[in-house]
Image (tube, rainbow, N blue to C red; front, side, top):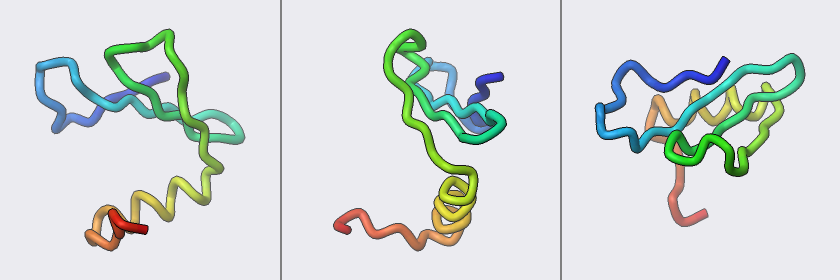
Length: 60
């Protein structure tokens, strides 16, 4: 099931995330039939943890 953050605005410009058995999918809510990114669950967990503490480097 694809989900958006409860903090998303109502303008429809959101990122949707879905958990699957062996991957986490990410897609653009404005283009649901378009491409989606797929991440290994461990990679997604590390990304979320890093984003929560603002540890992402935009220039990397």
